[in-house]
Structure formats: structure tokens, C-alpha cells
Length: 242
Image 1 (cartoon, rainbow, N blue to C red):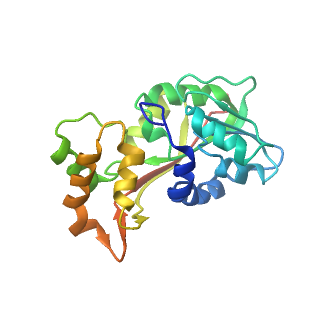
Image 2: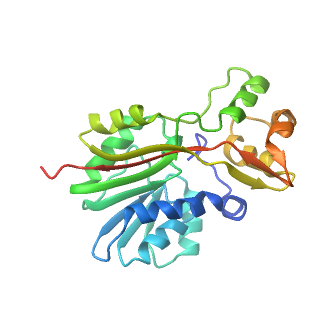
Image 3: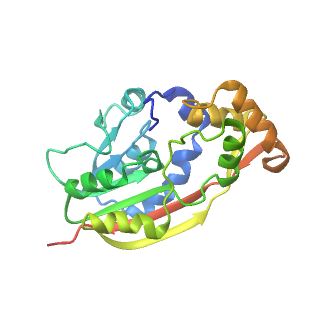
């Protein structure tokens, strides 16, 4: 989810497939069951939604981006998808689980998103989420600030304690939380510039992007590709039974 709410969905799924490929392990943590109703919050182009559906669960995918939803519907016409915002969405009926991968670091109003997730869950329902965590892309962000100055960045990268506090304020019980490094490969000479165009293009022009790339070449580029210093926060929380 970008502030401009504009995505090149075809380019996203062609060049940034690692976003959902890494998220496949999160589905193991979700452990969807055939009888369950599950919401994929921030479903993007739908690949992980389809993986959840393959378990036999009934799944709905929502995303703020009309472009992403259009691509998801094209990719998986038998799965329901709709446009909705993480901070305002409503469901007709509560679900057994809410799943979210690589989305909520785009949502700065974390309390509003947590409140909507809590409201969407049945009692004992679970929230399984992964997002960028504290220190995510630290080296990259430092270079962006060196080039662009005090630009307002669109991302929210909480610590374990910070995000647990957000969830607990809304009534969740946090059952599991971990922050870990995940160096992520962006292949090709243009890998980092492509990453910046996709995820930072709303506030960083082409000249600035090229300057960021050159500043980082000596530390992040090797063997024909770029390694970006991702850190991820993975959490499982439960809405209490009563």
C-alpha cells in the first residue's frame, strides 16, 4: 500500500515475487483448516490468497489498490477479492483468522488497523502477520535521507514491544512475536533502482534514485545483484474467547 495508492501490478508480480515467496512460510504458521473463513489483508496480486484457498479454507482477499485487486481477480477468478482499506474495512461476518504479509508497514495508523482486525475476528480468532520490523532497510533509508534530506518516509517499522503494545491496547493476546534479519536479493544491475521505483517512487524521483543506487553500490551490490537489508517482524495474536 503506497500513499499514492498507485501500483504497477504486473511489474510487481513479475519483478517482486519474493514478497509472496517469503510469505509462504507465514502460511505454515497460519495453518489454515478446510472449515475456516480467513481474510487475507493486503492480498496484493493474490498468490498467497490462492495458497490459503488451496487448504480448503474459505478466503477473501482485500487490498487498498484497485490495480492489485484487478490483477488478483485476473490471476485467480474463483477467489473473491475486493478493494478495501486496512484502517476502515468491514466484513459481513467475522472470520476465524486474519492473515497479512508485507502490508502493514505501509499503514502508519497501526491502532486503527489493529482495531479493524480485532473487530473482524470471531472470539478465539487469530491474527497472523508479518511486516517490516524495527531497523528494516536501515542502510537503504540512511542513503535516501542523505540524498533527499528530511523527506517523510511512508513506512512504519515497529519493534516487538511497540507492536505488541498496539495489539494489546485493542484487546489482543500476543502469543508469539519475533524480529529477525532477512537479507533479500534484488537481482540484476537495475535491481535496487527497480526496488526504489516500485516502493519509493511516490517521493523519490529518478535522479535521486540513481544517486541512492551509486551511494550503495560498494556495500550492497555483488555477484550480479543487490542484497537489501530487510528485517521482519512476525506476530501471532488471538482475540480472547470472552
